[in-house]
Image (cartoon, rainbow over all chains, first blue to last red; front, side, top):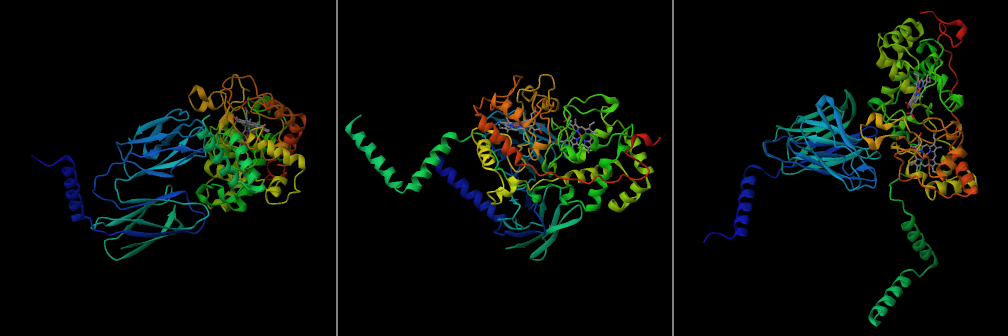
Length: 212
Length: 361
């Protein structure tokens, strides 16, 4: 007789961990971010990779806010919007520069809607609510599991972040903030790297990373 | 009840009483229960003093004083209207709560407009403009009245020609933007910069919030409690500027679809943007159609559960306020007053606000 199902499972798990550890070592990226003045809302640091990753995030709405300031999505996959609020919402995006346009229509309390990401990868799209113009979140379509979303708050200027288990052949770390200039750090040589954080060329802060 | 459950019940009671043994914790418990009973289901931001750090300037950069001044002069300059007689300040008069006191302002060709002229206080924090929120930012909004045939009725080309003709504007635009040619974008930047400078954040209510308990009358303090409690005002008028930035139907409109023009969904029909209430005592008459003459009328309107028009918000219910409570609410609204005086600038000398000396074009 063959192996029991649970044993099959276990061995597959073992096998896959072995397999992955054969080309992923325990390198991690530790970063520090500082802003000169009031920070923006959110940013994302990521290491591009060939690893296939699927994201279908769920974003909720509560107290007239999205429950997250940014979520990672993939082209072709779904994003689920929920409404745990006591008021109606109407989630939409209309970012012509990234050809991202959707409107889930009216969501009553308790409602749930989904959309399929049909715009290009490597973009960050702003999402809002047509009934509550203050509300805002972002969908980042970056195709890598090695990322860290960093939510900023208005009275803190210094932040740290870690991205664990990055591939040992990683060559770049990217750092994106909506409406800011995209930062690309070449990490193929050396051990610490830094760059100004700029918006339309104007310096807004600094990012420094080290590989451990 | 079985004896067992009686005992258990007693035990629980003893537990509760033991937990709440001091008078102050009794009070706290009562307050908590009262809070739980009256707690409103809709989330509202606390009332507060507006924070300059929350303003989203274009490019995150506050404009310099020169840009604000330039915007102010444009705001008062009638060359922005076809007949050279109407400036932004004609309808949005700083000495009249940035309105004109009329139910409906008079536009091009002396025809009344279809909606009431809103005030312009603290729009620096607004996330959408106009009663239906059709403009997403001040930069988008400020030139719309200029090009609107029913308002100032100029074409883009005419507007730029007129501004270019003025040596004053040529130098000023160049100084502010370091750019030789004046385009519509720069004009909108300058006027929007002035709009964002119209800030009221030091009313008696703000002084009260900062700890000066004598800054507002006891009536106003009672009014504040009603505003946040029994009268439910804060469910829509919340946060530093006393607006949720959202859209509701109070049962006023019957033909003007309001937000329904912008969002093609029946549920949005007849909804209008919640106006901020800072300096509201200076900005009569009220509502998107100017239909309510004074604040007392507004409170009585809410006390009656709003109007009878379609799509009325569920929150609009009779409030059963006493006459004293109505007065208290008015006293609270009055405590939001901090007049902003804007010295009328002299508009460039080759143009004039005096209609008898019109510029030919």
